[in-house]
Length: 287
Image 1 (cartoon, rainbow, N blue to C red):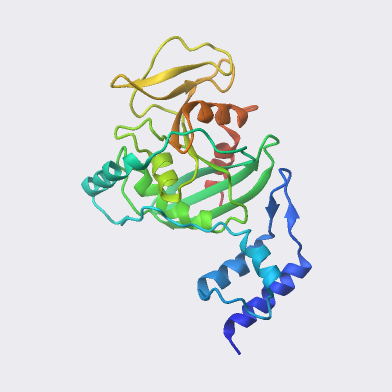
Image 2 (image 1 turned 45 degrees about the vertical axis):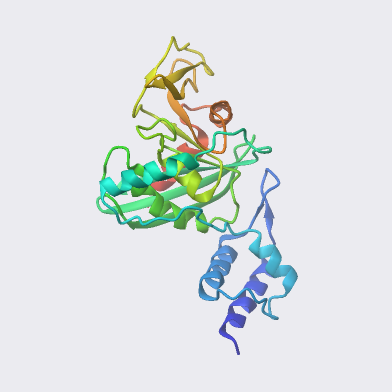
């Protein structure tokens, strides 16, 4: 008997006992146990042939609920800082600043916490506009790259990609606790992740990496001024809560700066930090 049929039998049993759940946004979510078994099958058996014990209808339904990562511009991660900068220079022309295509129903917040030599990547997917938790994932690994200003993506992308693979809901947009275009080489973590995955991304950072806010920023929520570097607008200085220090929003990929600002505000009903990355930060620091 083909060993994959044993896994398919487990999948079928779990699927029948734990039907797909519906999240608040209308997105469908699989129970974690079912997602884990499906991921096990995906890794162990690469053949696309459908096993008779599973059945075509169930197979198709299950496969729609795993986030399948297809990297568009793969490159090595075990590189020197100079080589990493060369990769950024090579990929920065791939960034697209175009209007969002369609409605955004889910946003995936991403954060990575470092403890000693261990990285813990966390992703929390929230629905819009309710901001209910739809899915979440954590991946732990060794820290793959030293801390070098401007090269955060080489430190955080390697643990983030496996976490994304375990999601049972594919977010419409990814939001990072970092910069996108507001970067010395215009290619921060949000850009790097967006270009690799060809997904809409934005960065919402708590501090400035490069650039200077231009003009007077009002004290009320929604106030914004451009973030300027070398006479170029690279982001927005945005007040997400009245009388609170601003955040710094920039495009990652496949959206405009206005889109990014609107999403940051939509995800910030109460706190300074948008809810997707705020909750991802909490999860990244959990035991």
